[in-house]
Length: 400
Image (cartoon, rainbow, N blue to C red; front, side, top):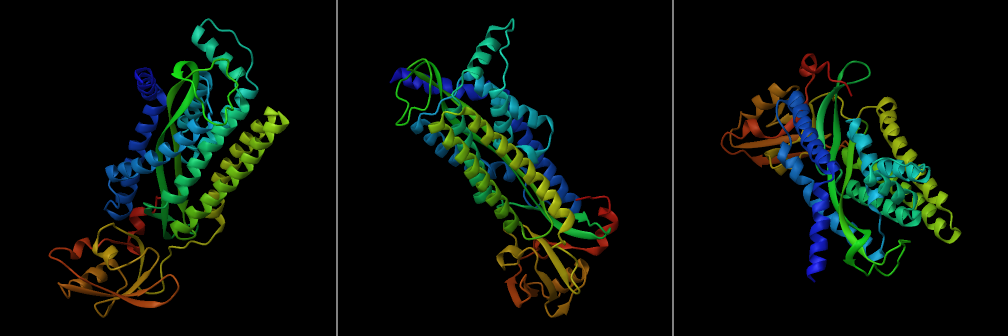
């Protein structure tokens, strides 16, 4: 028992000497701060605080880390240290671009799979590098393929379940030079994954399906920081619908890649695993291009209405959220008064200091009323973010 506990502690410690972990943490803080900055630029207010955004990613990361670790440990999938280093290098290449849209295990893992298959026999003056090269050239590609599929499945579930929880509203310039609204799904998840590493460790049982073709019968543990992210600027529809479509794309990618990996086992063709990785890499890059394509060809969703005010976003826990106002809806009257600007809105709101009645056109074109009590000094914190035409001069340099 003491040996197993020691192995687990060493596995946890391995997370902290992987430079990828620190780069992901720094990236999480930087992108969260950048998100707050963009919201303040558009609306003079933050929708979600920086630390709120950071902590919002912790629970999903831990849940998926526990589930993924259990799946990997039970299946018996193991990776040598050299292969873990190569996958980390794939992530370092992504991080060097500073583009959150590329932070994906499909890209990092796809690069690592292709690189491992074609990795040359190189002898260096450094024993550690030589051991890693030997690990890479002798890796079990089927085991590596299973690990790759688990990583992509985790990313898919994160996007499906949490990708649209906290989208960030923005004001941007349209193709014709007018001001329009948009939402950005922007999240980073750092998922801690336990996996087996062939070594002189204290773990000798590797699960019901021993996929590993290692030379030893004992294994250690490593805690790998899986980085997954979404950075999708949404201009043509509501955020949840767009993120759900992204999740479907990722799911199809996982299924097709899994077919390649599954066929490689009975056919004994490692090249099929590599083909699955290459397909996932191309598919994930194609998804980035497709998001850009949609912004160019689809009509904008958050545009100025014929009358009233378009709601771009609603601040959490505000009066606007309590009375059920949704992004994309139009507010045409406040306390019986027509409104055409944010100034009109708050002027009409202050006409009745304790109560508000909003006449709303929902996204289906149906009219409804939203009512609520206003507490002391809450009229300026109702929490609705509008597409305000007068803001154009200030935001004319903001591009999609």
